[in-house]
Length: 296
Image (cartoon, rainbow, N blue to C red):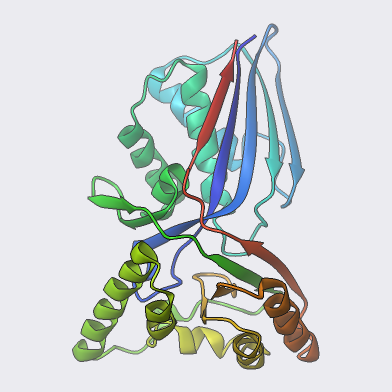
């Protein structure tokens, strides 16, 4: 019986001066297993993080159906097991990873009729995102992308980050409502984005510490997270290089070469003092992207 196992990494966007135009894959993952059944039943089992429905409304199943419809064929019966390790609603691209996993799993069940760029295009359309789906597929750092748009995937030097997800139910990303930004500041931010890319490409972490966080958007995001200022100060005292905030969710991302557990503890203690509950993970940069295994 044909079985396909797909593993897809987490992705962050909006964390740098490049905003959503720079995505970085991280070493948290979703694992999806698809199996062709001898009968005509559809069974879906969802385990781990999140509270998503075990129905065709699940992002992975919606993506799989999109592939089947594009080819006008599908297995008669199908079993799907999803192990979610990427926390939901934490700015780590859980829905993107599930969508990518569904596309690639279904494509392999049909003996790979769709090429990579066709799958990327479908992923971007289904998620409404440009860069994140490509980073989830390819790993590393991805620049640009979107429907029929150019992109580049770059290797990144190895570094770890402490990711803190504060529970701030009132948070809404201020980016859509920011006042107009002077052209000179926009130009300077473009320079910072280019230097951020260079820092990850070469492993120049002293450079990274000088160009993160973004100076136009991050202060407005930080102001909406109780305890963030003290948590970031505590991270620096514990040995962090730099701290930034991702898009859409109040996720605080701290890059460091050493002392990751000490940094995590210091930041969570600062958020505790502000009466903000948190979850935390120490992650590296995923360089593989999607991995697939097929058994027959």
